[in-house]
Image (tube, rainbow, N blue to C red; front, side, top):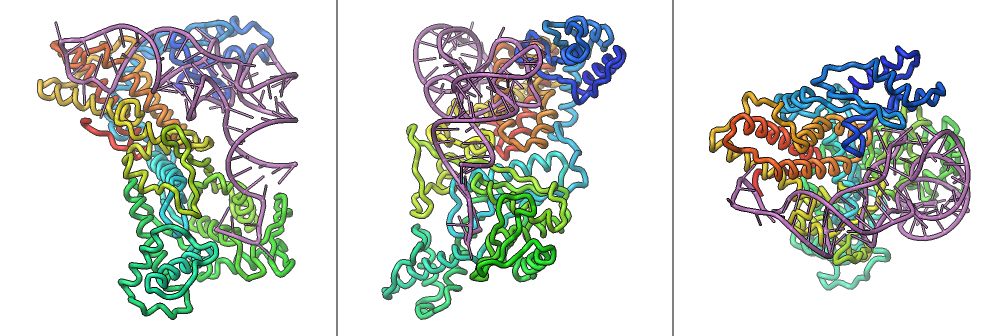
Length: 543
RNA sequence: GCCCAUGUAGCUCAGUAGGAUAGAGCGCCGGUUUCCUAAACCGGAGGUCGCAGGUUCGAAUCCUGCCAUGGGUACCA
C-alpha cells in the first residue's frame, strides 16, 4: 500500500513539474484516526521549495491522483497541507485473503535469500553461571537470529569463549582450594579467587571422580578442566531452558593453535602498524583514526583481548558471511572500535560487521533494586529467574525495552499471572481466539467464502488495517534490529482484538457474519502466532 | 578530562531518517457482565517531553551549551 501511494504521489508531483524521489516522500500513519490511514507531507515539501501555498499544492496533487475506490476510499486535504488517504474495503479484504493463504509465512520476506549471517551472542567465559545481564544478551541475540531467519537469511548462532587466560586460571585455583579443603589439606583461598558455592560442588565432584590423586598436583590444569566442563554444561542447560540452541561454539584457543594470532601480529608488523615499546607490542591505532595506540601483546608475552578479537573477526570474515552481527553489552563500547579498525587495516570490508550494543539490566523487587556483585557471587542467576517466572515471561521482559535503554526487570510484575502482565495479555488474546474457533467448529461454522465487506465497523476496520502492517513491521525489525518494536506491536494488536471482541459477537445465528468474523479471528491469531514466534514465545490455545 | 547511552504522566516505558491535539501499561477515581474465556472493555484526573539557546512553515525528534544518571576510558575480558 505504501509503495502504491508513494508511486502515485511521485507521479502526481512529476505532472506538476516537481521531481521528488519516492524515498523522500513522507508517508506515515497519523496519530489521529480522523486523519485517515496514511498521511503524506508531499505538498508541504513542494510548497517549501516553490514558495506556493501548501494547501494549493495539496489540492493540485489530489486532482492528479486517482485510485480504485475499493482500494483507497477517499483522499482529503487538511491544513496546513497534508494529504490524507483512507483505505477502502477492497484493500482490507485483500489483507485478510493474503493472511489466510500465507498463514505462518505471512510477513516473511526474501531479502536474505542466499545470504548468510553470523550472529554472535552470549559469549560468556565459562567461569560461572549465566547472570541476568547475559540473559538479556542471549534473548536479544536469539530474537535477532529469528528475525533474520524470517527474512530468509541463513543464520549461524555462535558463542565465542576463552578458556585460557588469567580468569580461568583463577577459577582452577579456586577449585583446587575447595578440593584441598575438603580433603582436609592445608591451603589458603587464592587472591582474587571466585566466591560462589558452585565451585565447592565442583570440587566434590572431582573428589568423586579422582579421589585424592590430585593433592600433590602442581599443575592447575585438571582443576581448570573440570571447572570448565561443569560450568559449560550448566550454561548450555540454562540456554536450553530459555529455548536457545547455539550452532557453533568457538574457542579462542583455536586461534593460537592455528597460528592465526601470530599471523595477525606479523601482518601488523609488516604494515608498520605494530611496534615494540616498554617490552610490549603496541598497535598504532592513531594511524587508523583512533585516539590512542593500545597494547596488543603484554610484556608478559600474553596478548590483550584486542589481538584475539581481531583474529576472531578475521576468521568470521574469512568464513564469507554476508553479514556479521555481534551482540554486546554496553561495557564493550570502548573496545569494539579498535577491533573493527584492526580488521579494516588488514584489508577487510568492516562494513559487514554490525555491532548491537545493549544497556544493562537491573532487577527490582518490591520496588527496590536488588544489588548484585559478581565477585561475591550474590547475584541472581538466569536459571533462578527462569524458574521463577518461566521462559515466556523471561523472554518478553528482556525484549520489551529498546536495546539502548537500561532495562528494569520488575519481578513483581513478571510474576503476576494476570492480564497486567503484558505477555499474558497477548497470549490471552490468542487463547481466546482459539476458543472461539473451537466453538465455531463444534457448530459446523466455516469461513470458506466469507463476505469480507461485512467487516465494516470501526473496530473491525482498525484491526484489519493493523494486521496489514505486519509485513512492514518485519521489514523495520530487520533493518533496525530492535526487538522491542515487536513487543509494542503485539500489545497493540491484542488491544485492538479485545476491543473488537467486546463489541462484536463472532459466532452467531447469522452465518454470513459469522464466516467473515471467523476469518478475521483466524487471521488475527496467525499474526499473533507469527509475531510471538519471532520473539520465541509460545502462543497457547487455552489458558 | 574525554567517549557512548539515557533523561517524556506518581511508577515502568513507547514515540526520535522533523509533522496535525505527545501515547501505553501500572497506580488513582468512576462505569460496563442474562451474551464466544471479565486474564476483558469504556470513561476521567494526571505533562514547562532534564534546562537554556538555535535551525524552519513546523522540534520530544536535528544543532550548540549546560545539568543529572549508568557504562567505558588498563600491559583485565
